Amino acid sequence: MGGTEVRVRLWLAVPALAVVTIFFVIPYLNLALISFYEPSHRAAYIREFTLANYRGTVLDRFTWQVVWHTVWIGAVTTAVTLVLGYPLSYKLSRASSRMKGLLMMLVISPLLVGVLIRTYGWMIILADTGLVNQLVQALHGPELPLMYNDLGVLIGLVHVYVPFMVLSLAGSLQAVDPDLERASRSLGAGAWRTFWRVTWPLSLPGVVSGVVLVFVLAESSYVIPSLLGGFTVLTVPILVIRTITELFNWPAGSAFALLFFAIILGLVWAFLEVMRRPLQRLQ
Amino acid sequence: MKLRIAVTLIYAFLLAPIVIVVLAAFNGGSYLTFPPQGLSLRWFDSFFHSRPFTRSFLFSVELATVATVLATLIGSGAALYVARSRSRLLNLVQVLMIAPLPVPGILTGIALLLFFYATGFATKGWPPMIIGHALICLPYVFLVVSAVLVGLDPSLEEAARNLGAGPFTAFRRVTLPIVKGGIISGAIFAFITSFDEFNISLLLSGVGTVPLPIQLFDFLRFSFDPTAAVVGTISIAMALVVVLATERLVGLESLYWGAR
Figure (cartoon, rainbow over the protein chains, first blue to last red):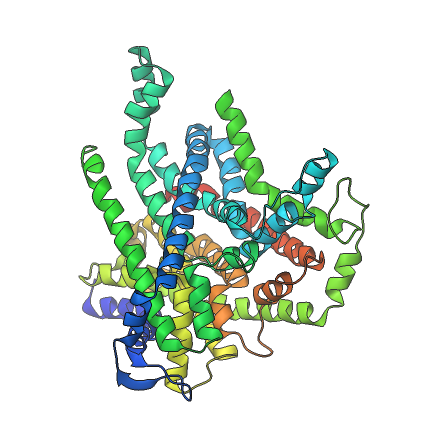
């Protein structure tokens, strides 16, 4: 291949790289910069360097309550998603190739229906006059508060992120040789023992990537907590959007958003550190 | 056996809200009851007579079309470059192309809003929306087209060159027909992504440029009216077409497990 051809090929990537650099990398740098600017009532911000936005966020007790609550919601969502996604992925990876296509379609199709529409489906099911409560009332039960609280938010989040967990797990489980499980069983290990000693350790890479993916996505979700949580559930993304679009305090909003993103990355890093040894044992 | 029942229940959980939305759209009553209050198209009628909904539906289609064309053109180009190049910058290019995917969409939306403000151009409306949506669609096109290119044998194009075809002809007659399926399904994914995108639109949509998800969000905050279910049913129908088309063009499995 000649040098000119290589250069021609580089031009293929230039438009995409330009778009990502100008409209992604630079805006993020700009966001970081503005988080150090002085807020103002008359303009979007004043170009004077200050640490007050970060100091204000870190020293505010209310901020930490919301951060803690958001992390808790994300952690529960991730755990439940793993418990539901694992059997699904296991069956998927052991299905015949004809069935696999069909099952994959069942997992992927919810992904293609917008988050808002799926959330609306849950609103119909969980509302005070919704399907579940109609059923409970027909049986003369009490009215159950299923929505506009943490429970509703968790149901909505788990539903949206199970497919992501399945996609992460399926690849790993696919690689676990069924003969290993059979060997373990024939050597006298029970089904549970085989699972914990053979299948689970071998599927750890998929578990780790699924957990990280779902946790990060759930932490940054805005639509589901604001619709299924009503005005009672407050998460960091909701608070950030409020600071930016209602209070118009861009510097404080940027600082809070970046700080929270850093906390999430820190938690992900800690999790990966904990998982490093079990993962190394695989090699 | 117990596992099978559990798995069936989880599939039911995944599909329940989607089925419910479709039922609600065709139900006669103003909220869904069991037994349903008979088949009716009155909510479709109310959707097509609602100016805000029809306007934002048309806007969403226009926006998704423009964003898809842009993202597909530049994303496929980048994928072709990455598949062929042995440059040292390759990793950097790959990271940059995928970067918009794992970061929180809401944060990208805020970053874009502040960026457009700083440039002094319009912060809301058509141009910011197109750029934001194209940016969000780009990683999907790049990933899907790259997945198809991994399975492509470079010696095919070399053979064409050895037989006297120019680089452009070799590409058009050999490479393009093979990757066409990947480009089409990348475009389909981009369209759906843009059509459903919420976070970017929340921050960048302005008067007259309200896409369907934002319209729906504002509506749902104060109302349960099944007109929303009609919006959902139309989106679900579109998603169904997409899944079937992708399955026929490239096979859904290959999207995930790579070309095998």
